[in-house]
Image 1 (cartoon, rainbow, N blue to C red):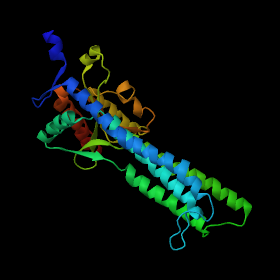
Image 2 (image 1 turned 180 degrees about the vertical axis):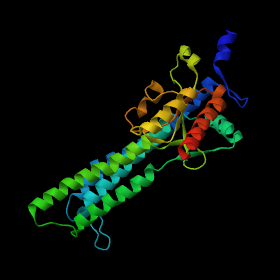
Image 3 (image 1 turned 30 degrees about the horizontal axis):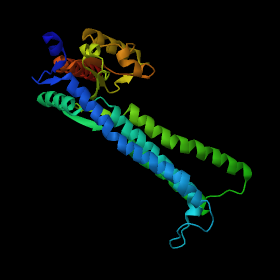
Image 4 (image 1 turned 45 degrees about the horizontal axis):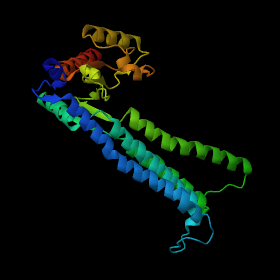
Length: 291
């Protein structure tokens, strides 16, 4: 019984001893915390398209402010509500599903801080969404205002097809960027950084607790995989430092990527050693490439 109890605790390299169940409990609390926000956004979208939108379809109805009629710009309004709502939902879902809890985050930050590095949260998807969606809204507004119009039927049809494709891209690209590229990273010198992704099972089965926590470490892109000379150097450094290769399940997400990265896997107990291992791999890579 005593051994089982000990196995459910996590010994971090900085000396902290945190219950594995505490981390899972914090994760579930974080998931529950985001439910009201997600529900509120869904309710707003449903109310708009079921109650407000039909009202805007009636000519002459709705509030008119200094000649502005909602009926005239219903497409612009509808797209704004839908695109903003959809992006915010996926943005919050990414935060909710990230396996980062206060206890785990503080322990990792302390380890990184003791080594002299800084952790940053990279969230550029909202900037991308703001730019692409602002262009979408502006184009739709100009179309409904009558500034953009084509008398030629072929040109008009081609423009509509291109616009539909752009609207689809303007919402899909930021959402994909959010899930693929927004991450927690450790900034190194020059152009290098290392991304961190904790992983652990959230099931209630006590048998799963023995697996505890894994921390995936991934460097930024260092070269394309079609450069034979650099690919040989990459394989040599990865082999010498026992770094996982891209074909393993740990890094299966990057199998189809045309670029090479260094990968490492650690547990809280040996986090510093494994982190320094991938840092030294990048240092060795940088030295060889410059020479």
